[in-house]
Amino acid sequence: MTKIKKFFKIEERQSTIKREIVGGITTFLAMAYILFVNPSILAATGMNPNGVFLATALAAAFATLAMALLANLPIGLAPGMGLNAFFAFTLVLGMGLTWEKALAAVLVSGVLYLIISLVGLRKLIVKSIPQSLKYAVGAGIGFFIAFVGLTGAGIIQADPATYVTLGDLGSPTVLLALFGILLTVALLSLKVKGAILFGMLGTAVLGIILGLLKVEGMPIYDGILSADLGFHGVFGKAFTELGWVLSHGVGWLAIISFLFVDFFDTAGTLLSVTSQMDFLDEKDIDKANIVDATSTIAGAILGTSTTTSYIESLSGTAAGARTGLASVVTGLLFVLAIFFAPLLSVVTPAVTASAMVIVGVMMAKSLGKIEWDVWAVSFSAFITIIFMILTYSISNGIGFGFIAYIVAMIFSKKAKEVHWMMYVVGGAFVVYYVLTTIFL
Image (tube, rainbow, N blue to C red; front, side, top):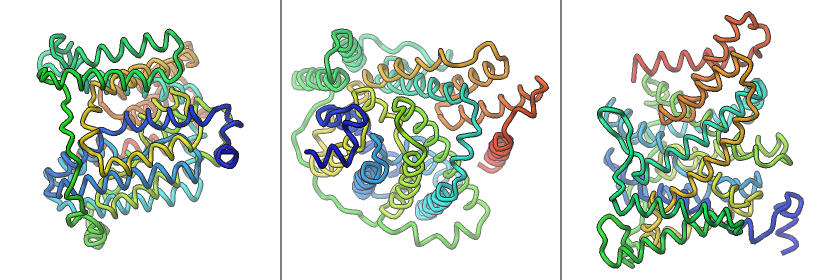
């Protein structure tokens, strides 16, 4: 135990082994949905869902364990939502690329991300961001993750007239999610250690009980171990179309799109997670980006879309995780999930909604640190937050927030106060949006 504590700097970061284990389990439960959602989305391209399931689990396990051992951070990684939808519905079904070509684009984007991380460009970009905008990114991610939790559970749902509206309060899954939120709030109010994890477990237990009673809409455990696992023709396919992707304009557009979204989604996630840990230095963050980039490469080879850092990791840090030991727990659970997939069927959005909402509350605290009395800052902070939520994208929030900040500073006659790298990044976002609007 002493060696474990020393390796992961557990006491130095004012944590305990028990707290790290609880945090790791909490993060896994918040992320477990990707094991079922990712194969469902990528199967639309013709990829074998069983192969994608195995690739997803192994990519998540490899990436999260690498984050634990190399960067010592409590951050889980897995194939990213949004990026998998872009892979399937825009590139393959929309533009007619084969899924092999899309995988090749993911692979190249990972290599480019790795180069950016190794040469120090990421560090320069992050340092150029005004502190208030960093706080806005953190708060925006908090609102975003809460919105994801509420919509996933059906508490908030789509509406053709008003875009969003209150969900059906008579729905069993909505009631289950509301119960989970109230249970977690009660546990936190009573200062129960591991409140977020116990809130999810309590919600899952109630769901199982009601499922056995066959209440419609509740998760039902069928008790059958997963079988017929195999890569089913997806492993290594990223290499078969590398030549085509590198020699065609649409291939490079796909590469840039994957790179852009992955880079800024990861930047936002790392800013948010590490903001709760003042003892970290730049070397830790650099290692985390190298792991993220390498994981995208590994994931593409295994046969899945971009593997990235998960904002759901905030649920683990909220539960007390501060070191890579939590990520070891999360990574090993992804390995076990390969053999016990049906057990995870109870970890539905209704179960994880409570963690997402509570994390949102905790992240929103950074709103108070924003310089709201400075017009350029307040305007860009607001744009960052509102675009992040309403476009359902962390990178879009960052992009439009950066552009808004630059424009406001120019018209406030403070253009010289803007770091030159902000102009480069803002210009890159403008070019990115123009190109994707025209060609995608």
